[in-house]
Length: 297
Ligand SMILES: [Zn+2]
Image (cartoon, rainbow, N blue to C red; front, side):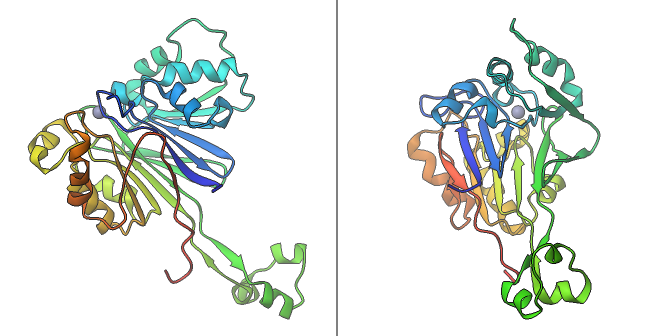
């Protein structure tokens, strides 16, 4: 099983359908679980996906429209009920703090959940995770919304034959520096993922998606509803595909589809996105990050 993988929990936009739950995604990143935009029904979708409250370390809300946050009460209460021992970080737009408070305390429960709150304001924020940086950048939607980018720092991959050649072993490897380190290792680009939900095209969409291994991006509408997309602060599949191409994205995941479309319309999303290998997300899909880039890729 891949240790970096996206669990798709829901792929509908404002109105869930028989085939698509409200939005929701869990990114498993080594030992950490980042839950993005838990819409209504996320707790049950997690069960279907084989995920437990204990798998959660971060809850990241892009904005406070219902399809991006109505699952918060169930998830928080489950964290408490299951006695999750580690703290869970919550990131959300500061302007929606009143909504967060209500969702966090929506019903009566024995509240033992240890939730560290990180409201984001202004242009965005940068938060330190276990082995990654989580960046939030402001998007362009009807209400304040932020997209997220998770980036692992660049590192180096050791070359065993070079280490042997120089007789370097054990703890000496960790102490290598300068020209010897350069000779005995090659650069290892860190992996990156971006999560871009409700927004019009804007500079920060491109900034979030630049060079990522995995881009999860809303494509609520098709070309035929392009004007509606702009009016309501959404992207079309074509715009999502353009972002992926211009940013050198490796794997593109389209999601957050309007309920107006039927299954028969779905090939049009891929066609209009025009990005090789793009994935049209379905509920309960598991999508691994592509293998790590090698130097020179
Ligand atoms: Zn929205």
